[in-house]
Image (tube, rainbow, N blue to C red):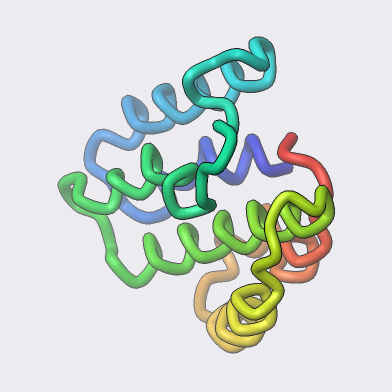
Length: 129
C-alpha cells in the first residue's frame, strides 16, 4: 500500500517527468527494504523531516500541483510519524494529531490519493512497507 502510494505520487501530483520520479522512488524504497544498511534506510538520530528529504525535493519538479504535492507529502509524513511512534523511535505525538486533523479536512479534495492510502491507514501505520 505505501509502496504504491509513493510510486503513484508523482503522476497524481502532476509532475511532468512522473515516470522518472516514480522510478527514483521505487529504487530508493526497494533498496531500503532489501538492504538494511542502505543509505536510504533510517539513520540513527535522524529526524522524520531528514528521512523524507529525498522525496520532499520532488515538489520542485516541473508541473507539480503544489496543493496535491503538499497533501501527498503530509500523508507520507503521517505514515512515517505513525511508524516511528509505534517503534518508540521518536515521540512526535503532538505532530501526529495535528497531521491527522489537517489531512482529514483536506482528504475529500484529494480522493485520488486517499483511494490508495487513507488518513486512517496512515495514522495507524506500524511498518514502513
